[in-house]
Amino acid sequence: MPPSIVHRPSSFILVTGGAGFIGSHLVERLLQDGKSVVVIDDFSTGRRDNLRAVAKNPRLRIVEAKVSGCKELPKLAAKSEFIFHLAATVGVDLVVKSALHVLEASFHETQMLLRAAARNATPLLLTSTSEVYGKSAKPEFSEADDLLIGTPGHSRWSYACSKLTDEFLALAYAREKNLPVTIARLFNTVGPRQTGRYGMVLPRFIAAAKKPEPLKVFGDGKQTRCFGFVHDVVEALVRLQQCAQARGEIFNIGGTEEVSMLELARLVVKTLGSKSKIELIPYAQAYAPGFDDMRRRKPLVAKLERFVNFKPQTPLREIIRRTASY
Image (tube, rainbow, N blue to C red; front, side, top):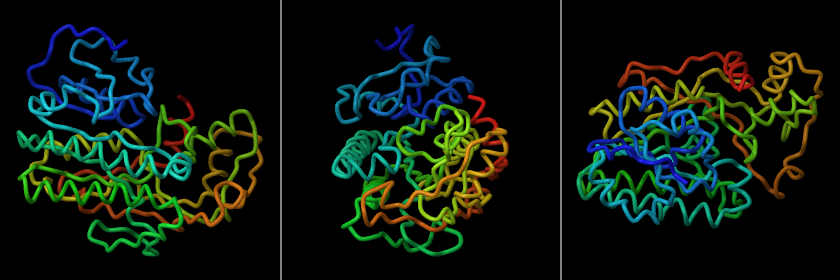
């Protein structure tokens, strides 16, 4: 059962998906800042244990429900001083296997929340994803770039399309309903509490290295990514919340230290002093035939730095150490 409510805050921040990996860190940060927080989470991928450290905080209330199934949503949205929308499907594995759920749930939940927020013009930050850049071959991605999504024949791209639809919907509310909206495109956020259950690469590698078991690298291992430490990401989200000039804008949030998946596997093994081997697994074996992947995914974060004077910069080795120590 949700923790008992000591008092109902008259002014609070609403966090959807607040029991998830990123959401729980954000909730902790907001409470540390003296804020009152209401979390809406159906615990489909979030975990109550993620909020264990703050569960008894009298300034925290947890509502177990989907956004669309929360009877109090209109009242909560009206009384909130700000809304963080983090509720979403997570992980490539879940996206590939449950494309219908991803497409239907993402649009419906976001639509319901935006509609509720618009009634009182409650400022809202929507978390999106680097997946929206699709198959673009650019060496670095800017928020103003055109987007290149793969064929609908590959369910891999359903998540990108669902989040991109969320972005279009949010910006339409901003233009037509005067809703103060900020969009944050997250690039591979990692850190303590993240699970490899849904295919997240770093926790998968760390878990295998600790056992020790082979680290399975999909494809040729030459595809590159940049990883943002969750505490850096939360700092960026909080600063965007406090920046009125950010309303109506889109921001990349992520690290800029580019690494191939093969190099990442080797770095995990070395950092943890593991005896694990590294195995290359063809995409056709790891996923359905015809699986598409992005070869590079590096964000330009100059816009974030310009608006809120912040650039995520925790080194990759430190990210690995702190994630592994959890």
